[in-house]
Length: 308
Image 1 (spheres, rainbow, N blue to C red):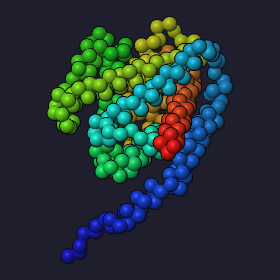
Image 2: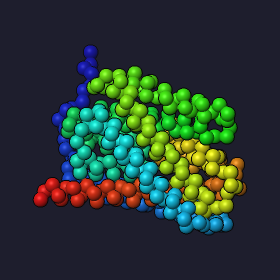
Image 3: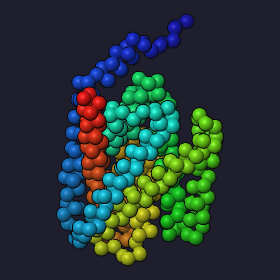
Image 4: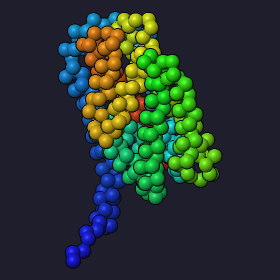
């Protein structure tokens, strides 16, 4: 009888050391940044005809508000992740942790969620937290984002009125109790519920800022009807949740853009909706690049101060 094949621990260790080596990390950092900027350029180039033929009506004030809200959404997501990581055992927040978050934030946009999770797992493996923080924390982050996104859609989508808002409130209240049963960590069920309630609040604020960014972006580029707020915000939430449903695929295979364009087309012509969804994707990528750069500079300064 043939012996089952086993993983060579020595080989795995060598691979892990190579991945974590300084030159490998620098090469990965350069590659991630290059791919991110390259994808942004490709999206713009490939859809340039739709962008230039649309009759835009730019409003600088709204566009600035859109960018600021998108940066705020990225900042809230960062705070949420470190809160989850701390709860699961990663109590310190070092400059290396911040750098890792910045790089995995960028890698999530293009290579897809698996690389995003792998990057976290490798980073926290030294502390023995690869599974708990890297995989478990990312799963909690994803599940809460989907659940709260559905709540936002239920609360605001015109199609769910009048019962949708009540269902959303019930679901928001239920999330900490259901999560407290599933996520049993130190401190007991009550402590887990309290932590999940905090994370739910972070996510709801993140949804408000992210969807608000799309609203100000769209209305800052094209004249929408005055009563378009609820439709645009709920459409953004629905499109984002739809893209999260295919989390294992690179960048959701454009599902977010297609969904957002289809939902927005109820208010504006289809070509305009497509162009706006593309610009919306560009906004999120630019904001991620800017926020990741801020984090990397912050981590570099922290590392310099610690060596002095």
